[in-house]
Length: 154
Image (tube, rainbow, N blue to C red):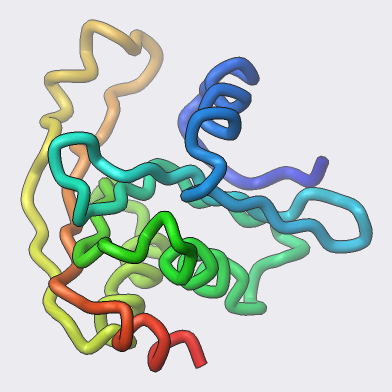
């Protein structure tokens, strides 16, 4: 497996559970039989019109090819997302590539994007001891409809 960059450390078990429980809203991409990208996402139980993108990872070998955008559209075009009108994700303030990806997605969908702090850095203090965790900023993209997703994915 190729190095996918700097992501929060999660156990292999967590990824297996996400893949098992949320396969209809998650995706992996391979080049030459090697994993080069993935997105883990799920429909919010209390908001069935919202898909939450938990992580996006793209290896160096897959960068600069629009892979992350194509994976997002792959998910949004699935039957599991037929009622989705919003996409939520959280991004740290210093993660400019992810901010750019999701701002670009909002522009392509011709919709708005709201940004607000979801989790403060203080909230992570109990869980992490090495370096302080940045706050997680909620990016809420929408509303959009299926037709907008289809047009933007072309």
